[in-house]
Image 1: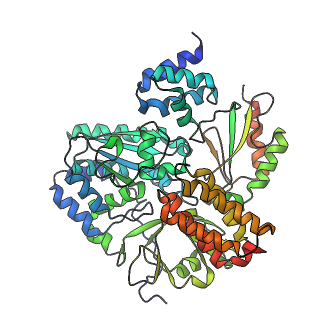
Image 2: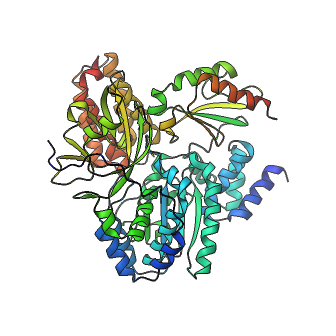
Image 3: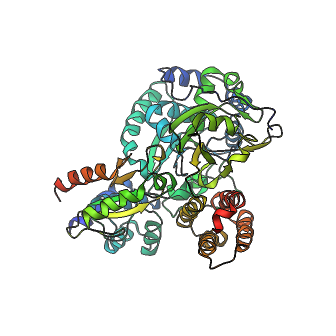
Length: 156
Length: 395
């Protein structure tokens, strides 16, 4: 059996095979493959003995459980009011310009995906973004370029 | 004018570091349960998540329900735009929240507690678990049977609604349930459940430490105690402040405004926009007879100066609600879409200005017919923005 299957079995062993373990398992798969592929959802449904539609329905409800293929690093820029007022668009422009992608797209090398997200809870330090689960606040275009440069040095 | 309001007063309870939690826990679980409940009731603490349900009554109701399987849940799905206080509490004084959960468990007869932490705060999971480990060690030492675990959300505003949160904990889509039954009777796993906001729990710690009177002496009638405010927007000093309840919005703006404050959004996107001309007649607190217009809030205070377009504000909120609506009930699912499309059409000139009145009626319909607080409260910001800044919606 391949590594995704093993991963799902391991997650089910860890969290249990009840309906209540579904979210932690979905989260664990996203950590692993950056998103939820159709195959992973079918595998999870088999492992938990749930209808695949139930797994799909639950997974697609939550915005952090992406079901489109994503890059290794998902950049989520907050677009809610405080961040929007404090220059979110300049941040987005800087990212788009540097990575040559639009919102919803992934870089060709599969390193970055760019999406907008709702309130991250950093309104007093706007604008804010998260890359996977790492938080960055009080952003400026220069700061964003520096942050992304560091990510470009990381191994894929 | 408000006759009975307080001058803005800073208070420092919640973030004061103390090393007394072990003592407070030990002392509390030796007191009669009824006495603890009475202490909470007499403090008049109300839910700090925004809804304002009396906390003592909530615990009392759950304690009176028969059953050996009960739960204490800490709602840390802080998603309201402009709110960020719960994160700070869990970062700086997690042991206060844990202690409060354990005392609550002791009172209502629950041996399990869960902290539902929003996915956006995943970086808090590890330190929180470490705090829980230390806490559990002490519980064992004093023979208190109470276990706490953290459950991570995955990015859904609606899961802050208590019954949606239960659904999410049970591994389902976060779709709110019908009420009644209320959580005190049937909550998580359909068992009696106390669910409180992070800040509410932190306040109960203060009350158990100092007694109800110290808390009750703060604030005004119907709005006792202090409250954390998350201040953001056009302000020279954004941040988190603990203030005595009952101040007028004018005093708040005098303290936090940038000198050109045009309007303040009280209570986040689901709250109300108050224009400058109403600052002095608006008080911050729960609804009561004595203090004129009184706005409850989960603590989100967003200030806007005269450079801001109120149309953009509303457009931003409605896009937020359209995306965060769970889609379960028609008034909210379709209503949010239509309100957003409607104001865009008026702005563009595709619809005449009186169309705004139709939209206001639609928001009123949502208020009466939506299944949960999300859909019901869209009308709050919608009506307060459209009625006070109508010309900005049109031109």
